[in-house]
Image 1 (tube, rainbow, N blue to C red):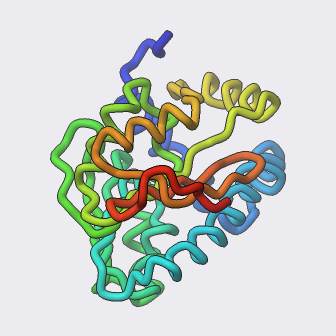
Image 2 (cartoon, rainbow, N blue to C red):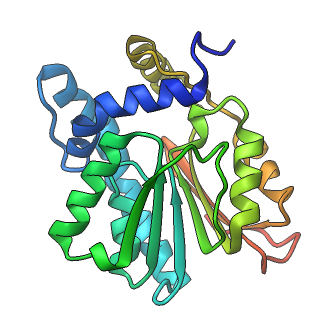
Image 3 (spheres, rainbow, N blue to C red):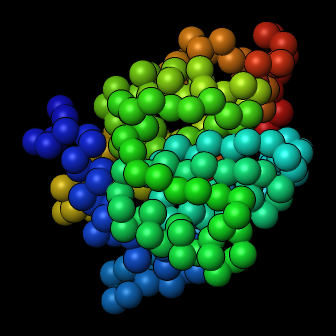
Length: 231
């Protein structure tokens, strides 16, 4: 069952409070004993590995000069990675505190001229078109994930990249416990269903990178149906 609050409210409130800690996780740091353990052993390690894979993927996609739309951009790490590789990036997030961190990081990195960050609900608001659309760690916060993924797919002129959590039992239990404490709605959607929702927008799976805790799906308008994905 869905939580008492709708997914929009739960995600906005949770990530507004979590923003500083979420940002620390990319550096494998945490404030207080619990956050230090979670960020160093779980959340942070996932973020670091995911960023490395995305960096390799972005190099293959040749982002220089392309437009990138980062839906649910959070504190901006993925947006800034794409911008540093030559893309023009528009990040959208529902949590104002996350967006503030993203703008500060862009200014520190000298990437403000290649990025812009705006507040919005990617599951409801109008989504602008872009060459490459990113849904990194977003799908699991929406019960109606199919609509979200299809909307993102329709906005992608060339490529849709989805990073989604795998259904690993002990990690699911830990994340559900932390989500309940924070009032967050959390859903572990089957990976094949997420991919199918993207197919509905005319995209086909070009590559699949499966890790222990997450999978990155790369869907393209140029992929040939029936070709076995790499990963």
